[in-house]
Length: 129
Ligand code: HEC
Image (cartoon, rainbow, N blue to C red):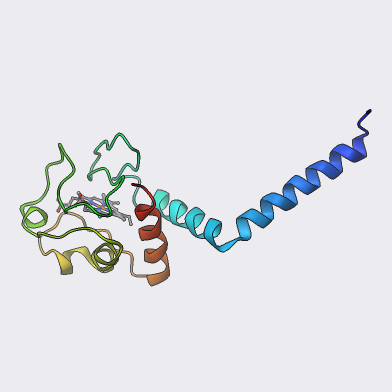
């Protein structure tokens, strides 16, 4: 079969439509936003890759379900080491409201006051196991 330009254009339009539909489904939209927010607000200090590399802050891949201050090779503040916290979506959410309220003396100083944005970032963090 010979493909005419119009067929190709139609095909492209369908692909674009499908991509749009996928992006507008709630689950996709949430993880895309969580990842985007993470890149904007967290990535300059925290990697999020399975190799767990540390930067200015500890690598956060798989952080949900881990004890606080337990990423190997990172030099944590005495405050976070003494916190005895375990990171779950709930404790991560609370931490991000105001890290130094939850753990006075922590060197993590970035807060995310907006509840919806916190939920999206925490959802993104919890998706890596
Ligand atoms: C300016 C650098 C910087 C930015 C930006 C930053 N952090 Fe941190 N973060 C740190 C440092 C440093 C620590 C270690 C704190 C300590 O030892 O008390 C930390 C610790 C943490 C921890 C505890 C990790 C563990 O292993 O116990 C979490 C969770 C965390 N940050 C989440 C985030 C999230 C989510 C964002 C983005 C909204 C973010 N951070 C942005 C520097 C940063």
